[in-house]
Length: 410
Image (cartoon, rainbow, N blue to C red; front, side, top):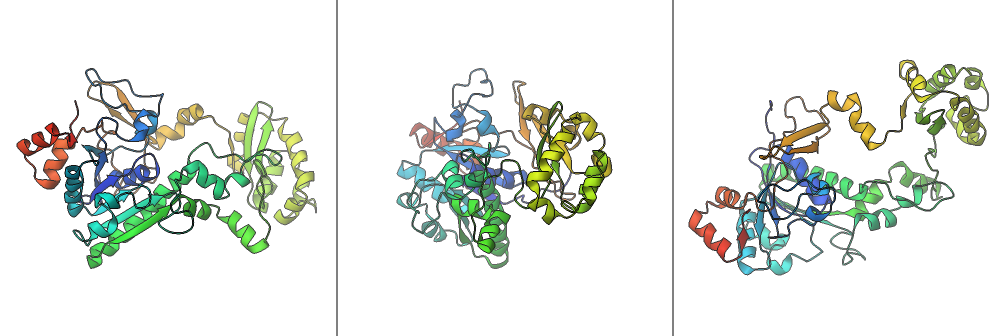
């Protein structure tokens, strides 16, 4: 792939698992960081077993699996299997931390202190280390000792209270949005801290929590409460402050219409053959459309119900009306947009099995994301990565493997 790897030479020690931490370190790896994923021998990252679906096993491989979930957030990394339950394994990770620029972990608060792998301990051996801790509820505060998962953060952070039909139960989105957004915020924070470390030689501790992030992701809904004093509720697919902005049922399926200004609304009315609705004093501004939502939306639904989705989509974009069909995920990946934009990258395993991956979405002209390695098998790089980072030789590595401190792949 052309272009420079902007994070080439940056060493990342990844002690995280499941989604938020691995999502963060995959982004760093996509831009050339050398991410060493530390995993427990034999079992590895929890998500390796979160299938089906799973990749078919390679002939002769009887180690941990490669579920679709695991594959979603672990490309471009090297897997190193180290037994952290042993003093020797802990000492080995401390040696690696002394060489690292960044460490990412998502153990419970204080969970790494007993291993001598907490921030204070590692700062003593590497003052420039950027150390990112990801937890459910942060390093301090009233809930710091609680276990935390995405689902809990979505519930406590208000997301579920505004998701779902108005008269229905609270609903979580179909993707672990608290995890994914925390991984993105962690990446941004790490890059800021890395910039500081490169300028000053001083590392720092980054405290990222799922609940902090979920609350921040409430965005305009948070400010609606803070300004207006009334908690927003569920509106199904409707928008609290913009109309028409929702799913409508066309004759052959659902379609989203997302009108954000008066010009777009006038264009919508023209396409639908009801230009008089654009000048109707009940609907001629967004504020009036919001106030009269209960009148306008049924009118639009009746009209849109007489059109097919394809017929509407043949006219809406050309007239500047934001709209789109409600695709299932199969339809998403059959859309010509995906091929044109390089949305899917396909690795090929040594035995010829394709390994699909959803590419980093932003397109950087000078320093694009790179896709050099498929998600690794458990312990696939134990020997080569330890040799690279620590200069360890074959005999020393063999002795560690025989003692059960490390594990290479089968």
